[in-house]
Image (cartoon, rainbow, N blue to C red):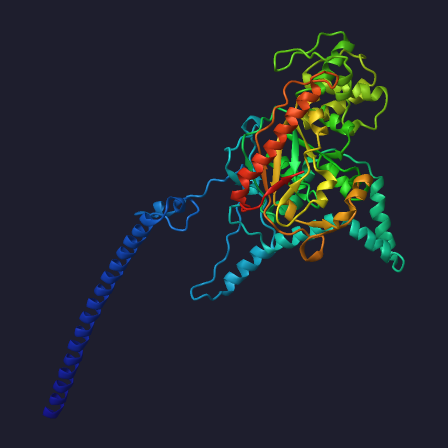
Length: 551
């Protein structure tokens, strides 16, 4: 019995020792935990002090909404980064780039997210409505279209889709020639060639299809070229302009991209354009040009498009319609009455647009009078003009399409500039081109100088010794190529630089003795304006040492 008691006492003493050892271990762990928490708090405080010191040492330009480091905040609400204000009216949420995890390794989830971002279409911008009086921009500031940031990089899908559609569009002549050669051996080539050529018999309507101009295809094109723009002066949406565009380049792709941008960014201000007659003989081109508001480059079409404006054209047509209806000439916003009713210039300028160019005789006169009445608020009595019903319906469509002023884009250099491309400097043809100035003075429309930086480097064209033959035939003759010798254009940034409008003064007829003198003065002002807008903005674009030669 005594032996058993001794054993129990020994076991109890051993357990007491173990318990004391456990208590000592717990005290040690608590001390270590407290020390660890204190060290972590010290590290966080040091990190905050380091961020504050670094932020104070950053330059002013690094503290914007796009800077990587912001001032430390004391609360979670203050730590949230405010979204950057969009530089245009379009707001778009681009998928952020997926970054690898620590150590430079990609996790499976990160790889899947990056693959989805690269292979799926990017979201389209959501645009808010702006009244035409709000079509203003900060003068001299560079903006990127469609909500793109300055460091935007298109995804793989955007690059491939834009390159494929651009190559197919520019390479239509090569595709036709290839199908013609293959048609000797393959039946499917004959069918494809016949279907492609059959599109030439489809009517060229509508002139300026806004839904086509704002389509996803042209959105990808603008992202492909990282399109940006800068205005030296905000445009007046209630005024008419003749846009002198430079350069033409090997292919007028810059003008096309700029036209789609204007149609989406300023939807209630219509921009038309003129293109070489030969481009309307090529399938696909002829319809795309028409849908974007382009007509063949003739003086008659030039006047037709200007007739849709607010400065002259339909105003004089309204006076003619008022005289036919036995009513006084309508008053306009400038407070004066139209003073050219019945003149030869006004009757020419009042020609209906291309959408009614194929209408003949009395129907054309009915469309002219009804369109003028719709634009000026004049009410014609029943039966005043033959064919009043159909013409009034077409005039209503015209009124919806052109509620404000219009702009007519003219590639002044034309086909001749295709043979003036040089890798070391810019070369445009302007010194002997004065026809657009004469038409602008006749209609009283100011001339807007526009230079598209980067348009001359998208594609190449040659050989140059075919220039004389091309000028006589009024069509380009040579080989057009871009990246890797294909029709796909090179992906260079495209920037539209818009200068201050050149005033042409009040409208003046060609029969006036001072007409040619004003043409010379305005033409000299346009040459100087183009030179000024180029040298003002070439440095910000990255062409600080690239000279401009005007011939």
